[in-house]
Image (cartoon, rainbow, N blue to C red; front, side, top):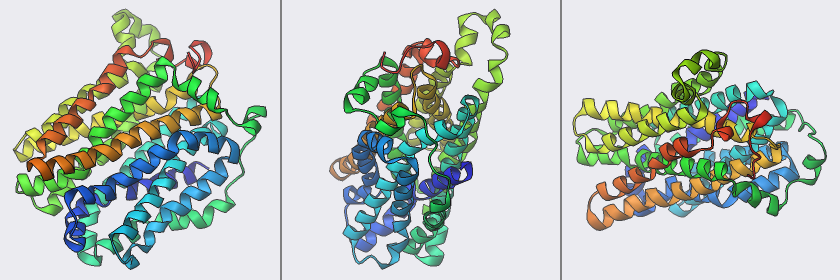
Length: 413
């Protein structure tokens, strides 16, 4: 089961931003504006936003295995990109991919809780996120070279190959594990909104949305920005942008390992007082990651030397991924956590982050079309990234405890 979830995240990652380095080719072939081209990257995020919270309720009723099957099929549809007749059909395929992405993300939380022990959850979440980040890195770095060899539409088919394999193999995966009566009855809409009103969940949702607003906007437009404003070739611009998810592979693994590594040294860390406990806690991880995301995000578009750009992009990549294992695991370790409630929280991540990830790349393109500059849009997105640092500072201490499943507040508190 772990192998199949890793494959699903790889398939999602390969197609998430694969079109970003190819946007100039799409603009040229279809004669579309920057605003319309941004839809190819951001539309899946809007679909994710629409499906996120309802998807959590749906998955609690239909089961993880069926939801994952739908996800595999939707992500595999991009394989027919070379035969699409126009821009609107390609946009529809990206919409279908967004459905698959949303279902896969929301269903993964309950799946992890069903199949893995509490200490294993952080590890599995780290590996899933790392492989997704690796897929994003591979597609950003390889899209332009593949497009030169095969054509840009056939490149999308190559990146959809794992989705086709997953669609074929998933029916043979084990069935859902029974988690009791609540699994059979699902979760009510009232309970979902009770969970989402909790202070801890609200801060986590805002943190994730703010970071991914900046990350998506920069990942979408930095290749074009570097080519147009910094005189960097399209291929090198794609490689520079691919550093973000490549660094993210190691950042998420570190973000998952550090809490486990220092958990057994809590008593020794007490000599540093509250600061020592904070630095190596989930809260510390969120705050540290937020600082890096702020600094790296600003440097990625304000610095004009290649050395500075590379350093800024590395820092941004660490900050944008280091916190993710903690973000995904905290809801699982709150008291009262069930697969259904975790699906609701992860669905809210998808809804609010997806909404921001849809709006802001388009906003950057619209501001460019009207002011002939990328800077206004980039600065707005940089401001949004402060949400992660704020979350790390103000997240309730008991909500971010590694022992939260034993003594912390309830999901809805």
